[in-house]
Amino acid sequence: MLAATHAAFSTALYLGGAAVFEYQTDPVSWGLAILFSFMPDIDIPTSRVGRPLFWLSVPLEKRFGHRTITHSVIGVAILAALASPLYFAYPLCFWSVLGGYWSHIQIDMANIRGVDLFWPSPLRVVMPGKVRFRLEVGSKAEMIVLCALLVFCVGLYPMSSLGLRGGLHQILKDFDIAYDEYVQVQGLNWHTLELKAIDNLTLEHIVCSCPVLGTWQSGLIIEYQGKARSIGKSQMHHNLFPVDAVLIKGEPLRVISQRVDMKGRSLRWLVDNLQANHGYYLLGELYVDADKVVNVSQIETYHPVIWGGNKVKLHYAKAEDLHDYLNLTAIRGEVMVQFWLRPGDAAVELSFSGGGGKVTTPGVLEGMF
Image (cartoon, rainbow, N blue to C red; front, top):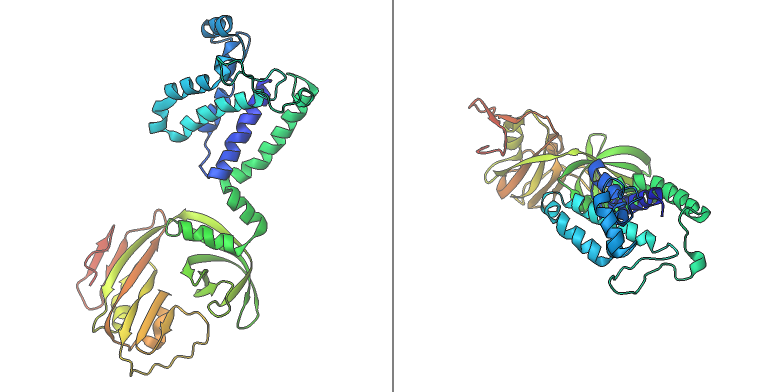
């Protein structure tokens, strides 16, 4: 095959591998895949790699001939041994070297002669089996294959960064795919949901790009118009029913959390004393006096604060969500305070209205109360 065909086929395998196995492509590993797609032809002094390495290609051709040892399993094994240090330092580069080398052998199987894959065995491997379907070097048929590979690579390029599942997600805009993806990566990056949905209560059609906060009852919690809303396919558990949904990965996310013991303390105490230079979310479960009456007018199927007689659950609640519950005093329970930071955000700073000045905590919050 021509060098261009080998380069195109190795690129197709490299980008296809990125789509399936979801590794990050980079110019170095990509370049290695293309470079080593030429290497099996080192057994020809007139080839692209044979000319500069004539001192190796000439004796190889005289001793073994073309498409023998360098196009065999033995050749792949020798290369793997020589490149093995890369496996420990740069695994992607190691597999790019082997993948590029193998791509040459694989497409040469479509040549009329085939390759001696199991050299020194005389068994010759060809694909496809019938001669009339195999390619002659430099023929019109090879030019057609080359053009098809180039078009295929152009289509694979965006898919390689999204992954196969991500690419299907972009096409299908399926909420279940968005949910499954988020479950696997939550807490690592900021995520946004490009959403078309229907409000289960008002039947309003909603189109938004909403930050994703977490999960809830096989659905997601998003922030819509400053409020946490649940989205999913169950009208019993969710505020919004998804029509189209695409999950968009954003900047790296850094979550700083602190547990607060709420025994004998009210939610008003928490809100009044928790003052910080960043927004925060509250999660937790508090047991309260069952005889306490709370004037709750909330009819949404999901709310960041859920009151059930003697128990209050907080699920990505903000201070303004606690308005009806501020006077509840916990018999026992904890609240987790989460600060979500972006790259370059200042360290979390806490101050206490009861005195004690300001505390700056650059990493994990310690001794908050």
